[in-house]
Image: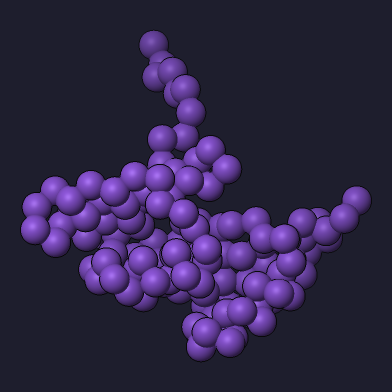
Length: 121
């Protein structure tokens, strides 16, 4: 018997500093909060809706920084300019592949976030 997977529940990033993480995800990336729960004083679970999928961050769950998230952007060049203007260091610079271009940054806790744009055609 195998497990029947219905859908992706969420992508999770462990964070330590909720205000810094919120600034990164909400201000730099422009994500909107879809759910937030305070488990105890200062212990948060926050979810962002990404086209019907959830990105969750929490300082209440154990974990170490991961390289698990890549976001599709409208313009990779505009995203790169915004990241540089914000002073966010690159985890790796723009890479070119036949179907796409991407680069990566890290959130304040070291979770890698890839920014990706598919090429036309």
